[in-house]
Image (tube, rainbow, N blue to C red):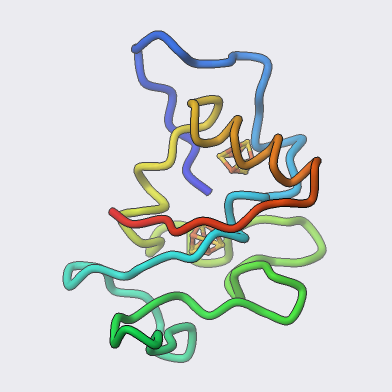
Length: 108
Ligand code: SF4
Ligand code: SF4
């Protein structure tokens, strides 16, 4: 997802997107008005909010399944941009994925 490295503490520097199966891209991503992602990647949620579609495998449809990379990286939503590699949430979803208990909602 995002690959930012903020200067703050609470960053696990052993974590890297390069050896992660993009597990944060299994989270529900709620789109904001300023997000501009391709229309075919968007679905309307039950609460009437726009979200990124996910495939039957649970990953965002924008993920390249072969390389587990974002195919719309330059256009990715704000929620994805703000997701911090090695941050608390990143580590939590990685741990939850390892335990096979993931889902949450990623909002900006
Ligand atoms: S838009 Fe890109 S970074 Fe965001 S969830 Fe989808 S694949 Fe991941
Ligand atoms: S869960 Fe963390 S390490 Fe894995 S792809 Fe997302 S930001 Fe990168």
